[in-house]
Structures are given as structure tokens and as C-alpha cells.
Image (cartoon, rainbow, N blue to C red; front, side):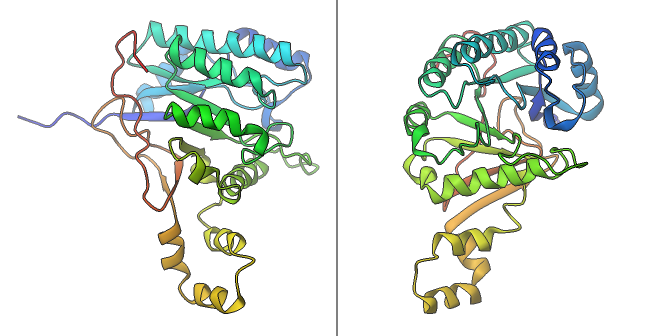
Length: 290
């Protein structure tokens, strides 16, 4: 008897609800500095059939739903999450979704995350790498991460516009997105959020920016107040020390034996010394209990 064909999950697939697609031009926003593409479930299905993923986990990209007004952000978060949940209901084998929150609003995200996980049956949460210049290690977000830790939530971190804005003539998606993701990872490390909230499983977009490339620099930053002799020893054994303290594995085109396990392609999963599984829920039946 032949083995079942491995099935891939695309954890980085952006959905653009029709009303959201109208909202951004009205506000003069070009996400990433490029025109907003048109998205339909039918077109997404064709792309998936051509490229191999069996399931796509939908998420709203930058700028998310924060436009400076709390009530507006909460309304839009509920609208885009409900839209994504309906797509999943219509095609539970083909789609899942990460729920959009309202950061830097503090109280709204916890309520919306609870609703999305319990009522809409979201597969996890999407967070922008920075929210109005605030990175995830900011103490203001501790209550949210404590909630996500308790729920053992899966969090997909996607870049946003850098607080300083793009360089002239260079769209932010070209390079700034990678820096924003890297800053977000460093923020989680330096704030010790990865240790305090180790129940949260993080997936970093775009293979983690350039976290892997600068892993030794990040390690030295965490130890910048240590004696120079100890730093010199670390410099001689950089690969061993980085591997011992942090795990950041990036994958491209990996496969999974189940349509709802081990979210794979184009991601970096960041964890402390013992890498935790980034498994997504294995069942697509409704309702899914949390």
C-alpha cells in the first residue's frame, strides 16, 4: 500500500476582503509601497493547485486595522476576521486563518483574540512586527502575551512599515520588511518574552528576515554586560553557543503528512533552547474546540 501523498500548508497567504480593499485607497495607503493586488478565493485556489499547498492559512497583511482610532480598529478587526472565518467555513480543507488584532490598542486585542479563537475557530493570531512603533517586547503587550501563553496560541509575525519610514525610491517591502521582522525577533529575545511566554509558538514571516545571519550579534547583545573574557570565549565558540541558546529554523517548501500539521514554507520558528513544534491543529471539522 503506497504512502499518502504529503500535503503542504502555506502559512503566509494574505487575504484581502473586498471592503478592506476599498478602505486602504480611501486612506491613501499602499501596503509595502506597492499597489494592492486583487484577491479572490477562486484565484487563490488556482494558485494553490499550481504550486502545491493543500491548505492556506489566511491573514491580513500590513497595515492591519490600526488607523489611529480604537473603535474603528475594533470594528475592522471583527469584520476581517468574520470574513476570513466564512471563507474557512466554505472550504475547511482549503483554508484556515490567523486572526487580526487591534494593537497598539491594549484591551481590544485580548477580547478579539478570545472571540476569534473560541467563536470563529481561528488557527492562531497574526501580529505586525511593530505597531505604531511599538515592538512585541514592549511591556504594554504583556497582558496580551500572557493570554496567548495561557491559550498555547500560534502567532504569525508579519512585518509592517518601519517607524522611520522608507528610503526614497525603495519600497518598504524590498528591504525594510526584513529589518522589521528581525527587530521584532530581537525585541522578543531581549525582553525575555520568549521565556516568560513559552506557551506561545511564533512563526516569523520571510524566513525570519535576517535573524539567522546575525544570530551571533544577537547573542552578544544579550550578553553585552558580561565580562570581556566571557565574551571572548563566546566569540571562539560562536556556532555552539548560538545553537545552545537559540533555535531559529527556516524552511522552504517542506511537506507535512497531514493537511493540518507542521505549518511549513517560508517561515522561521523562533524558540528557546529546545525548539517547540509549530504544529497547527490537525482537524478541520466544525466546531473545533480550543
